[in-house]
Image 1: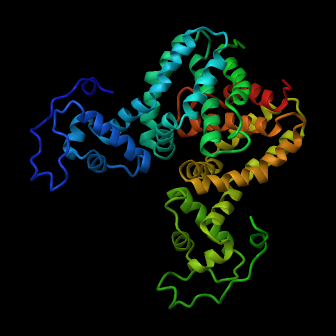
Image 2: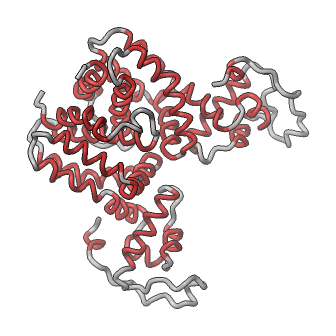
Image 3: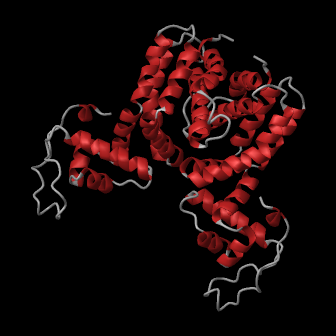
Amino acid sequence: MTPQEQQEPQAPQETPSPKRRRGRPTGARAGDSGTRERILAAARAVFSERGYDRTSIRAIARAAEVDPALVHHYFGAKEQIFEAAIEVSFAPALSVPELLAAGPEGVGERLARYFLSVWQNPVTRAPLLAVVRSAVTNETAATVLRGFVLRRLLLRVVGELDLPDARLRAELAAAQMMGVVLMRYVLKVEPLASATEEEVVAYVAPTIQRYLTAAE
Amino acid sequence: MTPQEQQEPQAPQETPSPKRRRGRPTGARAGDSGTRERILAAARAVFSERGYDRTSIRAIARAAEVDPALVHHYFGAKEQIFEAAIEVSFAPALSVPELLAAGPEGVGERLARYFLSVWQNPVTRAPLLAVVRSAVTNETAATVLRGFVLRRLLLRVVGELDLPDARLRAELAAAQMMGVVLMRYVLKVEPLASATEEEVVAYVAPTIQRYLTAAE
């Protein structure tokens, strides 16, 4: 997110007149405090439904019932809207550094349990899944996701690990969780898909623990 | 693959006449021994380029320069063509039971090294990646992949493991490798993307070894 996006920006122009909106239902007025949020919610819905490739600024604007210029004003290009959408969808992941900060003992179990709980809940799972799908199928979306995960998560995680190869280790732990999530919630491979969270945690926690704490 | 697909089938009709082919270049004659292979190669190329969702029998036929009826004759519906494509793309995975059969000692290392070598090579990576992308974004493709992996791989792997939860363990090992592959070759997260195969093997092998051999 650029600093410009973090503040509440001023609209670049007055509210588009009904004539310029070509008969669409009256949307948010530029400058409405909720407009940015509404565009963001629409963007997440459209990205989620169509994936990154087939999402256009125009489609997001239509879903949010605003002028496309307003979408561009608040977020910039499609890449930046996607980044803002990731920011919201990945909000649960930003608790990971706290879980690490609680100390090395049991960190594998804490992280494995936390990850599964986030993915088990359809409300948090759907937007995460949409981001992963976009990133797996589109190079630009992958780049945006990579940058986000690096800046917002990985560097903070690495700050908590006092080990050689800290970043590689964090990524391997993430890879284990990503793989489990993919096979359990996306490909729905049995018996992994129907195993209880505790069964999965029992197997996966020692893996995470080893990557993040074992000095070997 | 149904038994019907495994034998060389008879064409349902004579070679379509040039008139019926609407001026397309003369394609394979029905009954050509290479026709099935040619359709399959075209199918893999089209699935790979467009993903499962946006691939049609018609597009495959066009790429193979045959009549769509011939595609249907050899393979049936889109699902079955996708399954046949997986069969080819996943051929390297079918060596996994052999690697297991060589005994428990060092199995984690053998498997991790083998997986990475298959994904490291662009020739074997591209078609695998295409299948994974399709399965991650399309429910039907996921079902076909799941069935294939279960029948052709998982059941054979489990036959080699003499442990409780053998299938769950095999899936968790696969999840670790899938996650690594995704982060290394698709999302290209650093330093995992640029680490040597040996560095990755050193970290991942004990994980695979534990899932497949540790009675805990």
